[in-house]
Each structure stands twice: as structure tokens, then as C-alpha cells.
Image 1 (tube, one colour):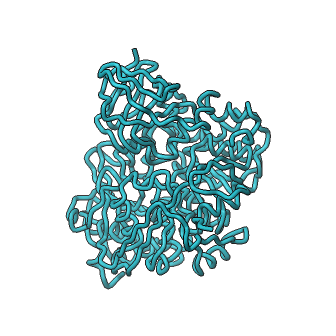
Image 2 (cartoon, chains in turn red, green; image 1 turned 90 degrees about the vertical axis):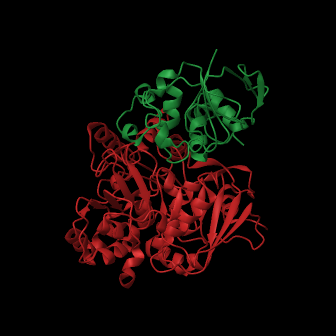
Image 3 (cartoon, helix red, strand yellow; image 1 turned 120 degrees about the horizontal axis):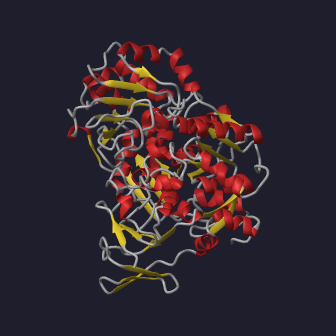
Length: 420
Length: 166
């Protein structure tokens, strides 16, 4: 039948055989907004004059981007979201619950074969769960909130095979940064990515989410993986609905096939001010750093905190370096407390924030000063992203971030070989 | 006559640059929001724009976050359309959804302050200053419908849902 995963998911959700290039109307399994997008969702929804949301169990709002509120304007947005939640009986994840892209899968709202849209560009994260998941704007989300549907152009698919074995000290973050550096910020625009290979097979679900999370940084609509035993075990533990795994046909039509072998990969760093400005760590080692941020929907999960804690255990953050750590969700936070990681962080001199987006979006909890350099585990390093256009942001893995916090300069985590 | 404006950067102009996260959370008045467009790249850029003017850029305009404040602020600044070699997909949908026209075309021969005329019926942009006609990629039918209605919300209301689209 020559269909890709995305073509099959769109066929199942539109009742028509979907091929790349088709414009279809599809049923949406789940949708959500966050505090940067929900005010406009609510406005657009009200303008449509629809009285009820299509299904109150298939929509939620998450207060994560600026939480707790840093100013009056944001407080008003949060208040509006709480009001809408009460009025329509829809779920609200309030301050402290965590980042939407950890909460939505963790609370079971997405499973294999689903079609999910979110008013946040990193909704592509759930591709790791074998779901079509993509970011949209507020008005698009409101249309779905009113109708349960939306229109889509079925995308072409690029197949990306990542083989080999990641060397010690390198992680799925390094792999996806390398791919984005190679393909460029527009390398997959309008396209879906299907991601396979030994490396995907061998990494945890936490690490897979990191890969799917970042595909939008090369323009992709989604970054979808096949379902294997790990995916199904994860779905069994979390998902409310029965998983419906979807495989691509053996002769599926891809617009392009990319092959990578990462057996010799060095830790990767994205330099200011674009995510595709990627280099080997050797090129930037020794660069002065003022602030280190470990967290976000890319790298704020338990495995990320574990790696950071192993490196930071018994060490001190370099003088005058601010190390900020934000667990991705309340569950991750509690697990990290039980495992002793939070003790390690605080002993080392870190500040641990409440779960949420932390300083990633530049509205609070660690805004840079003029001329400051930050090293972050987030997914974006655009000028001004962390609140100051005169600051510089480097991106890398939690291991590189932890090593950097100790050294006060960009440092190679492979120095801590015995701890990894 | 309407003029075109160009930023010093051409490719990969992201939505953080169009409107910084600092403002999207703070300001809910779109005219106020429009005063901060491209602020991190060039101060007071909005002051150059007269109603009906154009913006031109290179590849991948609007990449990054899904914030709809980006096309809303551009529309509120008075721009008639943004011309670029290509657009990022979330921004592309958002723009037409809120009634901002995007034109995909070769922009190499469009310089800052050239006089332009947009002829959508014939799929052309006329560069009056240079005496050039530039072909544009036709706006997809569905997007053209949204524009005509003033955005997808109005379209949706008018058609009582989605079934008339495809």
C-alpha cells in the first residue's frame, strides 16, 4: 500500500486514503494550549459563537510558560484560563504541575496512533509515542476545540536512520543537534520525519522524547517513531486509551532518506543565535559561561536529572555561575527528590525551580544580563530568547551542562567518564 | 505607493524576533504589540511602516514558536503582505488564519524601499523601482478563502463548520 506512518494516521482519522499532498479534514484525538497561547484560543473560541467545547475530556490547558506569574499581565491571562476551565469543565494543569510536553503524555492523554495538536510548537515531542503530534497556533486550536476536527495538508516524509552506538558522554540530545546542524533550520519544512535505527532502539523513552521534541527546529511538522516494546510498556503504564501502533509499509514513499552513524559522535553544542549553528564541543570548550540551565520539555526528565546529578555529586558550581534546574513535572520532581538528585543539586549550589518552563522563554526565573553567556539544555537559542537580546545562549546535553556548571566554562562531560 | 521593507537579516527570521516572548505575555493590545516587532534585531523598525507596505525576507520566515501574536502584530503594524522565499509551516497557517497575507516568491530582486505592487489575480509582484515582474506561487485556495473572509474564524462562522472546505 506504500504508506508512511503519517499517511496511515491521517487515513484512519479522515476516513479517506490519505497521500502526501492531499488536503484532508481529520478528527483530532486530543488538543491543548499553554499560558502563552490559551488567551487567544479562548478569544477565538468565543468569537466563533460556539457554546460548548467539542469534548471536555479531549482538551486541557497548562500553565507552564510563566508560572507562577511574574507580572500583572500574565496574572490576568492565568485568571482567564482558570475561568474558562471552570465555565466549560475542562482540565487545567495549574502552576507547579509542569511543562505541557511532559504532562500531556505522562497523564495518559496521548498514545500510539493518535492525532494530537497543541498550541505550542514543541507538540511534536509525542512523535516518540508513535503518534502524529504537531504544533499549531491559537486560532487553529480554537477551531478544533469547537469542532473536534481540523484541516491538514498530508506532508511528505523524510526517513532518518540513526545507527551505531552513542559513545559515553554523548546522548540523544547530541544526536538530534547534529542532525539539525546537518539539515539546517529549514531542512524539513512542511515535512514529517520518521526516525529509526539502533540508537533509537537502544535509548529510553525519556531520551526518545528529546529527539522528537527538537524536530521542529529543522522545520518538521512531526518527528515520529515506530512503536516497540518500550513504547508499548510506556503506553501501558500511562495511556488512558488503548494504543493503536502504526507501522510504515516496507515500500512506503519517502521524499528523502538520511543515514547517520553516531559511533564516533562528540558532544554537540548549538552556538548563538540559531539552533542549526552546531559544532563539536572541542570548538567551543573553554568559553566563559555565566548561567547554566538544566530543564525544559527537551531535557527536564528524570533521566536528564539523573545524568546531571551523577556529574554534580559532591562538586560545587563554579563561583559566580548561576545553575538553575527545573524538573519537567511534579512527578519528575518527586521522583528526583526520592532518588536524592535534588539534594545533590542544592548541595552543589544550584537553584531548583518549581516544575514548568523555567527561564527558557525569557519571562522569569533567570533572565540574562547584557553580555552574559548561558549554557542551556533547552531547544532554542534565538537572540533574546532568555529575556535579553544582549545575551548569548549555547545549547547542549544535561551532561555537558553539568560539567560546564562546575568548570564555569563550556566543558566536556567525557572528563567524568567514571560517573557516566 | 507602497514600499517594501527589509531587515538586515534575511533567512530564518523566527517568531521570537517578530515579537519577543517578553511582550507576548504582557501586552494584549495588538496595536501596542505592533510597536515591538523585530525590536531585538532593529530598534524602532515599526516606525518605518506605512499602512499598505510590504515586508520581504529570504527563506524560512516565521520559524520557531507557534505564537499567533507574531502574525497579529505584523498585521496590526499595517503591513499588507509578507513576501518570502519560504515560510515555516505553523506561521504560514497562523498568518492566513488571522487574515495576514503571505506571498511565496523569489525575493532576491527586492531591495529595501523598492516600490511594489501586488497583483494576486495574475500571480505577480511588480517591482516598480526596478521595472521587474516577479512570479508568485498562487495562494492555496483554502488560504485565499480565509483571507477573503478576514480569517478562519469568520470563515468557520460563515460556513457553519468545516465541511465546505474540501
